Image (cartoon, rainbow over all chains, first blue to last red; front, side, top):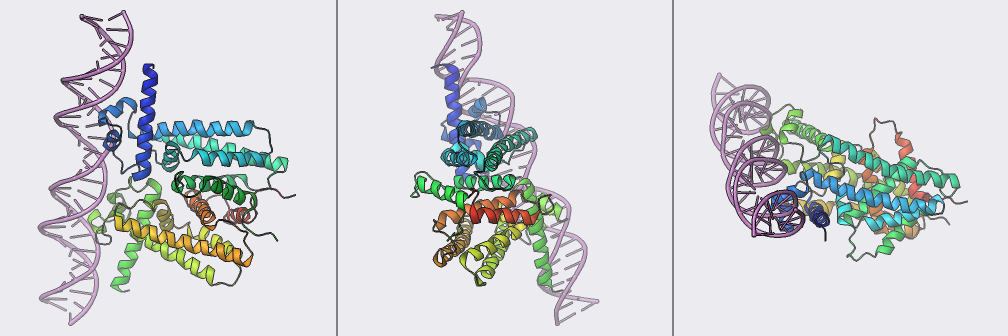
Length: 195
Length: 195
DNA sequence: TTATATTGTTACCCATGAGTAACTTAAACT
DNA sequence: AGTTTAAGTTACTCATGGGTAACAATATAA
């Protein structure tokens, strides 16, 4: 195994440890010493892999960005009308957000001290939201999705889905498939009974 | 004006200033000096009104609890089937969450260092969620709401609604009534086009 | 095997910010 | 008026934790 690869693996492990700690105790209540301890090294070692504490969040965001955009690539590349693409996105997204690094990004996106980082984060988030909006618009054009304000609906959807990452555990008693079904049903037909 | 009343007013103003600051910069990036400055006093004065920094969050939570439970009292007291109560709750909740103190509570519920406070917060949150679940169950019984997993759906609804408090501004360009309409439509019939 | 880059360590510095002690001023009740 | 209580101030303490300098060990390459 190459040196660069080893380094990458260690960085990944550090991100994973950090993300888990951030999810459990929150960003500010987690010290770099805590993270270092989880990784069985001392604090200064971390600085060999990350620039500073905030850089951990940024690197988590990079991972998240790749995965979510990858999902969107996959979903939009598939044939199928807008509604079907939306369904596939939701399914895939719920899958993705059980990963600690993604969960960490979802929870801590927003708290960037560095201005440039804050802008980059915002931009990447807007990009993703935009792509989901595009799916809604596609669906409205092909008639599979009813007329609606795609901006508002996309945000509401994201908030609900992102919320899931805060409470849902894969190991928990709630069945993954049932969760997906409930979300899809809600998005498909709402909750009002049509008799 | 009575002394006790004046004190209460000042406490309220402090909470409001603190809540606004917490929303803008986040809890940990806001120092007590910042809050004191907003209120034109010095830090030690704050300790005359609150026990410590965390106590500010707790007092915000108290305010939020009263308002949200008040809304639920009002909604459930009204005649009308489950779905209508649900609609009224959503309408009222979107109204409520533009208030800085409530927004602050929504954003910072979850980060309680003190164990007792953390439990109390969780309990109050569960209480509210339970009452909303009851509305869903009522609706399923009277036939106004389709069969669904009320636990999951209630959480998804809350996440979407609470999310609104993070981005929606009363002064913004987005019309309040349109927001309410979009949310209600989503909850009522989803987004799939029924031809 | 020796030179060099890569990881890692110990031991610090230093800013920040929560919380307190001791004191002053202003208000309110008798 | 004079005494007491509320409200606020200045001037600290002190723990925490991000970040760094300087040094040590280990692996890679010549």
